[in-house]
Length: 384
Image 1 (cartoon, one colour):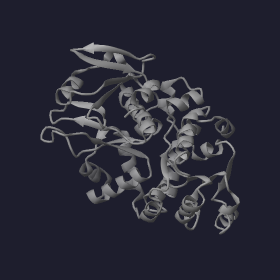
Image 2: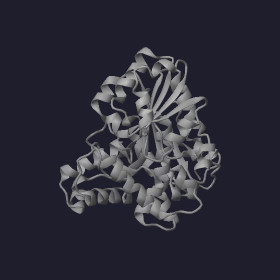
Image 3: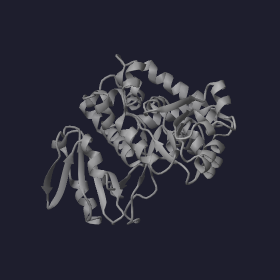
Image 4: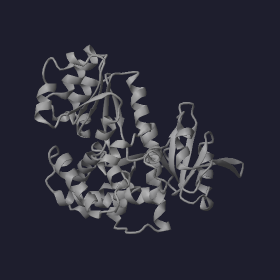
């Protein structure tokens, strides 16, 4: 399985890296564990790879002459957080060795550290690698959307011969041990894991801290600290409300999504996916696609009467793109789009449908609506 993954070139991400290297020589590549950071680094042409988990490699890298011998090279510093002072090394490279291109990976927590952020402000690009998107599916020759949804987007899980539920449980255990217990002062493991289970099972719901506090038997303040830890470590996606007419719209309650459909299915305990289950899972997959393209989450819109649009994207020219996610395009309801457009008349209306193979447009009460598939999202959002 590992050999198969190393042979697959994730062209979407390689092109992003190539583009970013034209502007700066330091790229900070982050994302959840097993999302494919190491294999992506190794697939960059002519790269020199350093595994900072190995003591002798750390010793070599921390030598004052290390960068002097790499002029004109492209190097990967994997698990760079294992170094004593990773920010100092990257700052020196950015300021004095601009001919060396460095892609650094490591715990996503490192990017939250004040010293790391302040030292490298304006010197690096941050690139978050997401679970497999539609471009990756082509590279991995995956055509079955249901399987992508059911297994999730971590490469090893998606291409394995069988679905092994134990692998998802072991991933959560590893996440707790390596990303949480070592860094955050979270003592109640059971309450923290319970919080993850509840969030994933309710993926796409509006977040109310008080309800989770009661169920997890911790304080509201503790729940907020849990949410911060999950956000920093990239295992949730927070989608915040879009609003300008504040008296009539939801303005403060975020929606929380699981980072990956496979873990949502696992936490819900679904052995098979029914048609009724595909709604929220499809929404998650579309969100993953949008984040991989725009490198940030969209907003959602909801008024105080319960009308809602899944995702909205505000453009600099004042237009607002409205996006609805529908697994079956024939069952699309346009009433919420109509209400939204009465408040925000300018912008495209897009339905991203699981059964759409070729984009087309329809008219509904003088409103143009474009129906597209997951594979078309990049082309339609590239100018946002």
